[in-house]
Image (cartoon, rainbow, N blue to C red; front, side, top):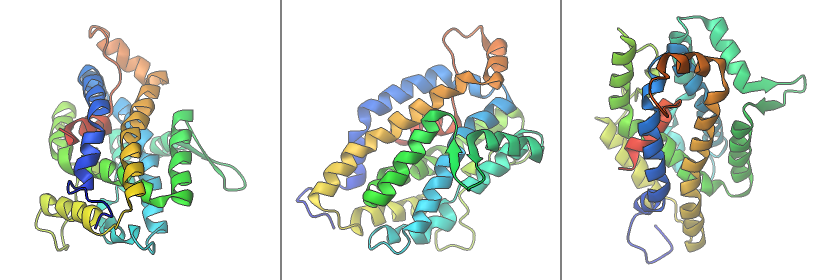
Length: 268
């Protein structure tokens, strides 16, 4: 339980703490939505920006599986995992061209001869560096990222999946598997039940101190700020420029990504 006398759940307070920056994200997404669903390569390029973020979060959840508090999240990891699904979607969107998908992934993560990773664009490097710093210094501050990024998929994924499938005339889930929540064989009857369990673990099992709660509420808006900064970088790619030519009749429309769309849905 919380160490403070605050009776409002920490998840609800995170929602309130992100209200203003979320409103900004909402407006950006409304302007940019048309672009993302004009081109499969553009959509693949867009989700490739967030593939490393989910990859990192899943690595860190695994890393802290024995942490006295974050260990509560670890049993949910098999259902939460998205990185592999992002990879499958990139292959599908690039017409099942695994080589093209590998090249796309290599643009996001480069590994030198010593095994050191560097991330591109710089905004992605900054994002990953920040998550790793939190992991080393204050792992409890990973909570806003875990809650927001995975909660977003659960809250709005079905609607966005349907929209993307319609836009690209997809006959299967290839290209939108990142939105699936694999509950088969689990103890959960539906996504709502799973999502409520995750919230319960965050609200009731973390035993947050008053200082930690303050820091978590300060960190929560930064999830949106970092995501927005990452979205903005997609305008630098050749894929974007080609898609822009197709959509230049839409004044002011720029690239959007599915994760941004879902995050906009999430905190309504």
